[in-house]
Image 1 (cartoon, rainbow, N blue to C red):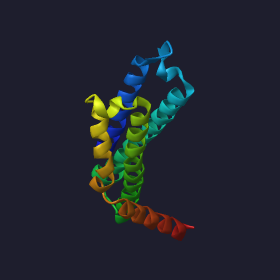
Image 2: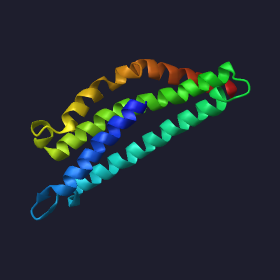
Image 3: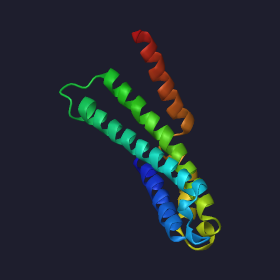
Length: 150
């Protein structure tokens, strides 16, 4: 999940810098709703994903790593939270890199920016943290465990 968070922030930061520096019709392109609103949306999602990653790490620390006695149920719960994060972040890396490329236009692939490389890495992010369907299987298993508690 950590590599995905890094890709999200790297892509977003490049897009924010570029759209603040690039002028069109006498003003920075970020001031246009189609660009500024899109980046604001991506910023919100990247912040939420970062919070989810930190939550997963905190739960792991509390329930597994530093717990006096770890349980199988706690391990499954932590695995589910981690899987949710991996699934969401792997999709978000692609979304952020794609949208930033659209905001930057041709310069994102022709002027040696890291955004093109980030886009390539985002394509394999789903596999790095475990295939997307494996993450969904773990999440689905947790949903079934929740139902047994009702």
